[in-house]
Length: 483
Image (cartoon, rainbow, N blue to C red):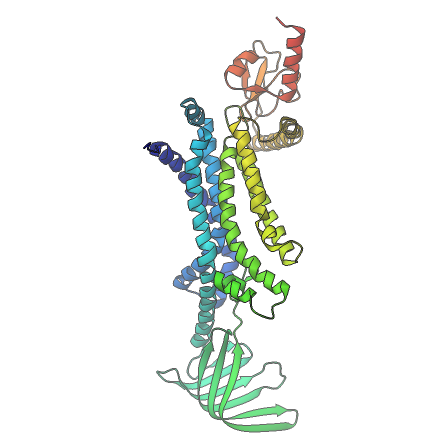
């Protein structure tokens, strides 16, 4: 019986290389998301007078929402950075020379990606609904505590908005004695209520507090008329409206986001639901399953993107990864809107972004395995031409402007650069793009061309390649002089 050999050393090495940039990317991205959410969160903190303990609780409930986007982005970025380094250091080339194929290297990437996807799924299915319920309870508790702190003996309090409450004495059981209430809600003249006793009750589900008064009188003034009503028990219901909107989202609104998967299915199958309402619940159900799978696919896509790096090549993996990430969430958002508008079938619409990106991932990986460019050669040359004609001049002009401003502030003259006619200096090379230029090229004296070579052979031995214009010039000279 043959035994399956598992190269643990290779797998552990690749996994270590993936996890290090993953955690670094996670911390950086989470810090960015934290700062973005911190400013609107401070409005709630200051309005409710939240202490450090409650602030930590509040932020921990928002924590899963941010991780739902941070983890997939960090997973994809970590894989791209890891394989960019392995490619630039020629470690991938060394592994291939030892007979190790990309399929073998893919195994630890799959394992790490599955772990990241499972973590995303745990946050999506379990922690986010639990966090929304806990957030609602915490915000209600903080709003009620603000009212309780404002209610003091022998003082008028305005903590309840248009209701002014005066309590003569509060006993140890929080019962009120000698109560005076002035109700100005939607009125020009207040309704005055006086009672011997009272207390406050809370209803978290309806975000409402109720003032219960016993043995008192109610005085209602309408113009010249005065109405007096005696009562044994009287209730004043007060909806709590704390500043619960954080960056446009009402964190206390109970909805689909706070339901479990079983509750979403039960709500969708409730008799009497309209087709649109039913789809809304089912779309939320699939939403929590689609994102973890999408995280897994995006992490796998990072491997062939990272393999596009190399000596003399532009490191396009990270910008392309960011573009794919934005495209995925844009596609996912559009597909969900079309599903909720009953334009697309439920399953096909919700899972179409994952199907599309799975096809893209397989295609890109196949081209990387064949050591070919991500795109067909004509498309790649077209994009490179646009990059050289549009992006490079803009970037070069911007860097030149910054360089001139810095030198102007220093008030130091810029030393003249040696020209192409200087003896022995025929090739100017760009240290950033690893591209060299010949005399007559429009980029010959570019700002970043700080390296000089005596001929093209020396430049190419150093790992530099000619730009598109110079490559055509060299090919033309070779055809004219075959020797």
